[in-house]
Image 1 (cartoon, one colour):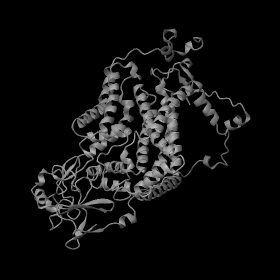
Image 2 (cartoon, helix red, strand yellow):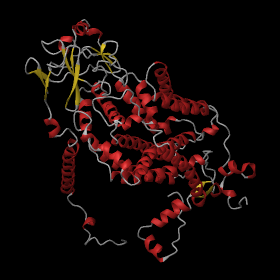
Image 3 (tube, helix red, strand yellow):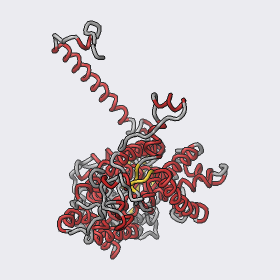
Image 4 (tube, one colour):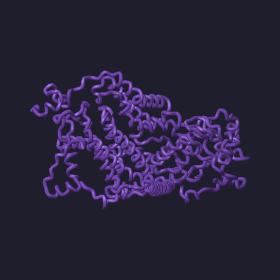
Length: 425
Length: 200
């Protein structure tokens, strides 16, 4: 993948394995010597952080499942039993819950990094689409995991979100109701629903892991994008992944884990909603239903649309539209750093997403609703109008001749492999 | 494989009857596809409500203890059923509403034809106008509206108010302010005596 193999088995065992299942060769070529642009900044470390978080979630999740009971009567109590009775249960459960939040912090930064530096542009469209699929799977997994606690917020989140599908009754009468009852396995959210959510919550992380492997594979065909968006032109533009980026990713991971640890040990419930410590009650809706923070922007979009069916369509489209970004962006320049007009629209988009997050936590009326609609309009306008139009009219800044030149300034000759033999040393 | 031996490798023998092989290939493929599709249905249908869920289909409720102006909530098929003993004023308010002004003009009453209009007569219990029996689930996204308890805010129309997204219902359970698209549903029920009903 990507570059000729430089692996040379040094022991008999390695030689034996190399002609049967060359895993050491793959690890060496793809994760040790893999040529990586020399100018990656810290925004590029979130891929490694995400891999770490997926592992944390799977490991803590498997041990939590050993103590959890997916029954209407047992679920909430078994979670409290984990918190109080199970050895280290409090740590494992808080790590899993805060871990979900940290996972989303990382994935949102990772996604915005891709948007900013044009990492979705050719030849990385499939890589990007696989990322959108991972994001979608993560959202589904987090939603199902939150439901398992079976507190008031869990129960009503499941009720509200599964009821979204009943909007299909507006298309074909009865279709939505039939579909919702199929999802529930009953006439309301109940034990069959909880059981299947648990089964799927256990399955999905492994599906994510599978798509992550495809995502990394797709990354290793063209190699990493970089902050200039200029393709690698010579071997001098790259450095081996190990030790340069293993150490950089490792350092970023340590900083990330300090934040993770600070929340985990000092404010484990800071990001949660207190109502989820009330056991689920199907006869009483909490006065104010809000999802976890990482879903708030999407919730604001759902509520900004007055029609039930179109609200649901907007909700799904808000993530689905990312799939089409490689073709909606008409600019031939990858990195927003070299796009003087689009830069402003990009940062406005970031502000808009954060504003949607705040608005999603507020009751949808008055000015909150007005700004919710305004931000929703901008959210879709950014992709459907600004991306295609600005790409056409914008005159980009001058790109550096090569990655090396962007790093070393005028000391380095402009890119091209002819300089490689002489070397700048 | 430089010199394959035609005499021992059947795949290399020239095929003198292609139609016969095609029949076997298409036939086998078709049976495999039909078999796979037939197995798909049990895999999907297992998620539908099971026999034990369906068997919990009816409950009996005694209305005698419910005074005028009071409301109770009972569970039927895991759903809350609102039973309200409406005051004369509430009944009159509901009757005075023209169907034309309603968001949802259909009665949504399982005991009546699907196209019955949403008059109060079609919403309230037959022959017993003070009684309103309905599934207490907001038709927007499934929250339980407020308005059953005495102190609850009941919205501008004196019926029910959904705290989730602000839908409001009148004293006949008809949606008057969105985003809910439909009136709250009336379950199948019947009076088994003057003061008893059977739901389901």
